[in-house]
Length: 316
Length: 290
Image 1 (cartoon, rainbow over the protein chains, first blue to last red):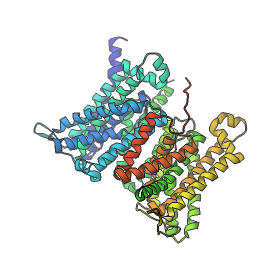
Image 2 (image 1 turned 120 degrees about the vertical axis):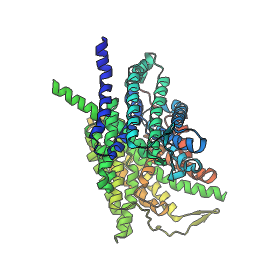
Image 3 (image 1 turned 90 degrees about the vertical axis):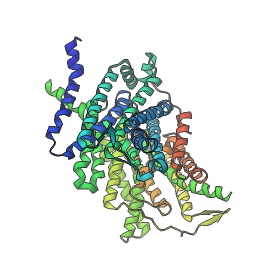
Image 4 (image 1 turned 30 degrees about the horizontal axis):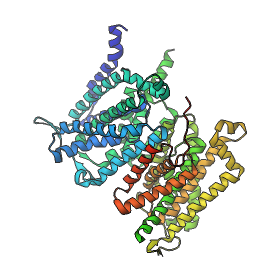
C-alpha cells in the first residue's frame, strides 16, 4: 500500500468524522441541540469502548455501566471530598476503573457465553448497590451534585463547550480504537472472536489479550461517565444501573458490532429517540422495548453494517 | 435458634419463588437455547393482573385463573412475534430481544396498571404460626406447597407423558427431534406457555407477602437468572436447588450481616461459585468442539 492510499484509507474516515462534528453545529437552531448532540457524543464514547470488547473481541458485557458509574462518581467525590481538581478526578476515575477491570477481569473473562453475561451483569449490579448504600460518600439513591469542570479560571458549563470537548474526545477515541484494531493486539482479538482455540494454537495469549481489551473498554466507559456527570452537574446511582448497562450494549448492537461509526449511530438513536418521544412520555418504555426487539429481529447486523451491505449490493 | 429458624423460613419462601423463576428459565433455555429475560415480567403480570381484576370486582380465585391465562397468552405472543422471527440469531441478539420484551412489558404494565405497590389478601389469614420461636406466615406455606406441587407436576409431565418426552428430545437435539417427527416449533411454544404459567402462579402466590408493582420483574429475572446459573443452566433440579440456595443466602446475609447488602452478597457468592465451578453446582461439564 503506497502512502496516498494509506492516507486515504486510514485517515479519510476520520477527516470525514471531524468535518461532520465541525459542521453539524451550523444546523443547530438552538442551544438545546448542542445539549442533545453532546449527550450523543458522550454515550458514543462509552459505546465505542464497549464495542471494542463486544464487537472485536467477542466478549459480552452486561455490566459496563459499572465503569460508567465509577468514572461519574470520581468527578463527584474527588472535588467534593478529596480536594482533587475535576480534570484530575477524570484521570483518577479512569485509573480506578482500570484497576478494578484488572482485578475482576481475569476471573470473569475465563467464563463464556451466558456465564460471562451473568457475571458481568452481577459486577454492574454490585457497583450500583455500593453506590446506593454508601450514602456518606455518594449521597445514596438521591445522588449528589457534581462541581463544574474548571480549567484554570475558566468554568466549563455551556452545552456548546461540552459539545466540542465530547466531539474532540470521541474523535481521539475513534482514532485510538482504529489503531488498536489494526495493531497486532487487534488482530489477536479478532482471532479470539472467531475461535479462541485456534487463536491459542497460533500462540495468542488469550487471557492476557482479553484482559487488555477489557481494561481499555473500562477506561472509555469511565471517561464517558465522568463527562456525563460533569455535563449534567448531578449524578445518581442510575448511571451504573442495569438499564444503563443494557442501553450501552444496545447502542453497540444497534449501530453495528465491530463498527466504530456504528457506536456513534447507535448512541444517536438511543439518545435522540427519548428526546423526541417526550410527548409520548408514558409510552417511552414500550416504544424503546419495541425498537430494541424490532432491530434485533429485522436488522440484526446493526444499522451501519446493514447500510454498507445495502450499498455494496446497489453497486454490483 | 429462633432467629436462625426465622431466617431459614424467610429464605425458603423467597428461595421457592426464585426456584420457580429459574425453572421457567431452564424450560425455555432447554427447548430453544434462549435466555428469557422477560421471565420476571411473567411473575409481575400474574400478580398485577390478579390485583387489578380484583379491584374491578372479580372474585380473587377467578381473577387468578384469568391472570394465568392472560400471562400464558403473552408468553405465546412473545414466542410467536419476537423469538420465532429471529430464529438463527446469536445468543447475544436473543438476550437483547427478550430484554426488549421485558422493557416493553414493564412499560405496558405502567400504562395499563400503574406504578404503585399492590397487595392481595392472604389466603388463610395473616396470623403467623409459631414454630420453635419463629413466626411463619400461612402464606409462606402456600408458596412452599405451591412450588413443590409445580415441581412435581412438571416432573410428571416431562418424565411420564409423550409430550414431555418430546420436550426432552427437543432439548437434547433439535434436528434429531425433528427427524423423528416432533414439531419442535410447537414444543418451543409450549415451553414458553408453561414458563409463563409458572411465572404467573409464582407471582400470585407471593404477592400477599412481598407485594407487587410493575417494576418487580427486572430484579426477579436477574435473581432467577442467577439462581439458574448457580444450579447449572439447563438442569431443572439445579434450578430448584439454585433458587433455594440463593434465597437462603439472601435471608442469612440480610439477617446476620447487612440487609442493605443482601443483594450484593448473593451476587458475590454466585460470582465466587462461577469462578470455582464454571458449570454451576449441578451442571454438566461441556467439552468445546473446535
